[in-house]
Image 1 (tube, helix red, strand yellow):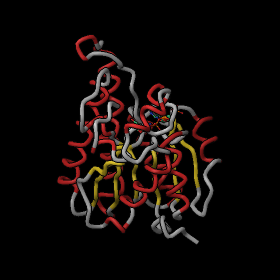
Image 2 (image 1 turned 135 degrees about the horizontal axis):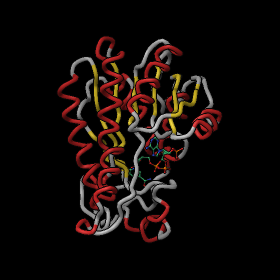
Image 3 (image 1 turned 45 degrees about the horizontal axis):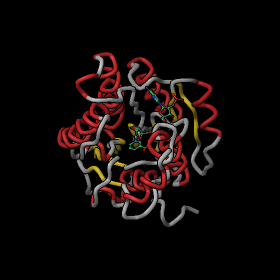
Image 4 (image 1 turned 45 degrees about the vertical axis):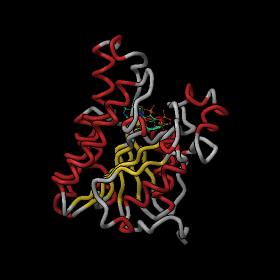
Length: 255
Ligand SMILES: NC(=O)c1ccc[n+]([C@@H]2O[C@H](COP(=O)([O-])OP(=O)(O)OC[C@H]3O[C@@H](n4cnc5c(N)ncnc54)[C@H](OP(=O)(O)O)[C@@H]3O)[C@@H](O)[C@H]2O)c1
C-alpha cells in the first residue's frame, strides 16, 4: 500500500537524471514507492545499475547511462523508457554540477560553460525530447532541481547560483509554453546531505544553526516534494519552484 505521504503514481513512467546517489536516488526511490516505474540515469552504466538495485517497489527501477548534456544518449533514454514501460509521464531534471567555485571575476570560461551546460541546457534538452516523444501528445509533468542559490546570492557560488536562477526562470518559461498538456515545476533546496554539498556541511553545526528548523536537509526532504509536484495532487500547479530549506531564506543563511 502506498504511504499516505506519497501520492499514487501507479502506472506512471518517470526518468530521473543524475539518480545514482544523493537527491536523485531519493527521488527515484520515492517515485517507485508511489508505484511509478523509474529510469535512473548516471554518467556510468555501473553507477546507474547499482542505483536501480537500491530502489524498492512497487514500481520497477532500471539504470541507464546518459550524460545530461549528451543529446544522443538523452534521446536513447527517452525512447528506452517509452519502449520498456509504455509511456513517459514524469521527467525529473535533477543532474547538476558545480565545478566553478570562487569569485565571479576569476572564473574560467570552460567552468562557466560546463556549469551552464549541465545545469541549464540539460533540463531544456531533456524536456524538449520528452515533450516531442510523448508528453506533448499525452501530457506529463516535469520537475527541475534548482537551489535556493538561484534565489539569493552567496560568496564563491556565483556561477552555480546564476545557473540555478536561470533554471527557475526557464521552469516558468517552459510552464507557459507547454501548458495545458505539460506542467513544469521546480524545487529549490538549501544544503542537503549529499556528496555535492559535502564541503558546505563540513561546518554542519554552524549551517544547521543558521536554519530556523535547526538542521540541514536530507535527500528525502526533497524527494517527497518532487513526488507531490509530479503527481496529480499538484494538477493545478505549474511554473512554481518550491523552496525546501528548513526556513533558511527567512533568516540570514550564509549558504
Ligand atoms: N546537496 C545540496 O545541498 C543541493 C542543494 C540545492 C540543489 N542541489 C541540486 O540537487 C541536484 C542533485 O545534487 P546532489 O546534491 O544529490 O549531488 P550528488 O550527490 O553529487 O549527486 C549528483 C548526481 O548527478 C549525477 N551526475 C552528475 N553530473 C551528471 C551529468 N553531467 N550527467 C548525468 N548525471 C550526472 C551523479 O551521478 P554519476 O556521478 O554516477 O554520474 C549523481 O547521481 C543537483 O542539481 C544540485 O545542484 C543540491
